[in-house]
Length: 586
Figure 1 (tube, rainbow, N blue to C red):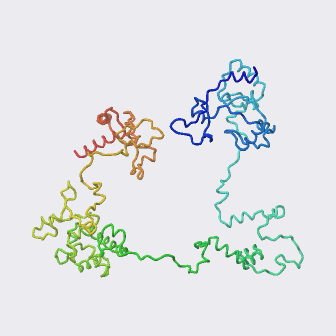
Figure 2: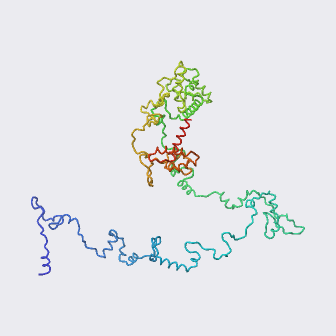
Figure 3: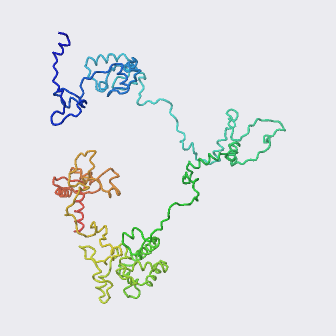
């Protein structure tokens, strides 16, 4: 039996159905054509077709170097196929520059060495004793400097050198208490001795050569006198070269194309950069686009639903002047009258209960407020809400009252003068607050308030009124800024930014306490302290009391704290209460 016959008998392949795939319902009309697909053995699945074999044949080395260059595997370095088998690449990969040093000791051994035994310590001391420096200055003690000094010399009291005798101070030497002439005379003494030896000449002093010739004069000067100024005005011209001066005065010759290019591409100081201005045939003050004519009303007029006759756009100057006039009249009323009623009666000369434009003009003249007729009419139109040409008491109290500080004065006058006509009706008086008995004139609704039904002030939304309904017991939502519901930890983390109520507020930051200059904070006053320390603190600040009084106040303060502890602030508050009660009783 041959080898091929033995191999074929040992391997048994599965039977392959060579019949057509269309056996059955369908008929194969073209049996001569080969069916598409891969002919597999019976029992194989789709996974065997889609998944390649795990062990694929490797590429030969001659082909692998080209594949490593074009399509390297993941994690491999791309190497040019011409250097694939270059031994220098392996040498460069394993090459290390420098000298390979072996560590002698580690940082841990140096910082925290092993404890030495007594034997090693004695050996080390014996080695160190050979050095002279160890004998002069042993470890742990300073150098002994008395070994080479004389025996009778005391280093604590003996002073080397010669004692300097004190003559005058440095201040007297620099600025002596002498006149200028005396100082100059003392400076000239003995200077003749230093002229020849040290050449001690003064500024512009000539050298005296002691010539005895009758034709020689020491004051003669050679040459032609040069005109000059002693103030040095021509020094600048002397220090500056003539070539530099002429260069600055000469015209700078520049190529026109270069200058035009620089002017077109580089921004000029004080001018808007316009790179295309050479192509536009318009003036420098030309503005592109269509000029939009502004409307006679603004955004505020639309939001507040003002009528066309009450538009505020374009009336800023007039409104500013009217505000200044009203402010002047408000201050005059506040400083010259006790209440609004007396001020209104001063304006109302004829006692008609209304103020006309003539009476308003007389008051302005009296208060040194010169107002022309046009502004006076505008002021009258601004204050006259009901458009009757007069200012009544309600309008007067709304527009000429200084910050609502002046009282009305209406109830007192009604009680003292029953026959006086009422300037205000009962319905025009409202209470200042729900809990107050004082009344004030009602606030007039301007055009904005009347046009906008849901108009509310910000103060009314947050209940910011004096004596209003308290919201203390109302349910609050959200997380409070100051967490008084939590106890402050004794040691706070660095990242803890929560305010537990033990920090200063904005008022304390703007107006710090006088104790902050000494480094004291609120915690120092609120911290519990011993009884003797509190007594010592108050005694040092000048509060003297007997021991019985101190014990009584301390026990009273301790009763306010559940733990019986007393702080500086608690003791001070109880002390102030006792002192206030004693003053009231006296």
